[in-house]
Length: 197
Image 1 (tube, rainbow, N blue to C red):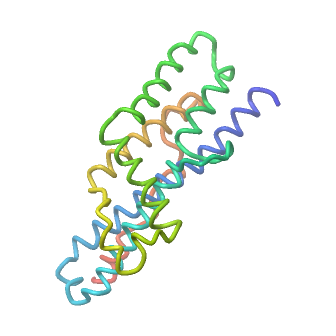
Image 2: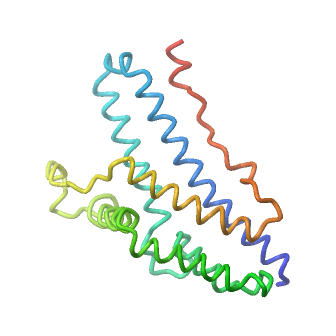
């Protein structure tokens, strides 16, 4: 496959990452809409609790997809995206190789050593392995209250910002366009607010 075709395939793969990032923004906008209508939502407290729990689980699940430990080499994660970029360094001008390698190394270093990012990834891995993907007896049923691994939103959004930075950097290497892809737009449009009009 020639370089332009390889780059196009790489860009198509990035669409999947952008879709995940856009969905995370949609979830955040739904959460903000719920907070904005707190008074109205108080009239349906159990519904509100279920929606908030579902939102948090979806945040976690989406981040888990992006940071899965995946033993399969074809798993689409941020770590595998960085590795794929290293492996395809030949797609970029030789004059940029050192700069690209340095930036990719910074991303890997952040994943491994930044306290907030590395802790968030460890918590996501634990929640995936023990709670969401498997029925670990320690957290099964009523015992789920034993789970103290929730991540505060500020940590999730730091992880989001880092993830976005990685994806946009790699996108900028592959694309002639330095702006975000057109499809990278949240779809949520204050639907809850519209219901309360």
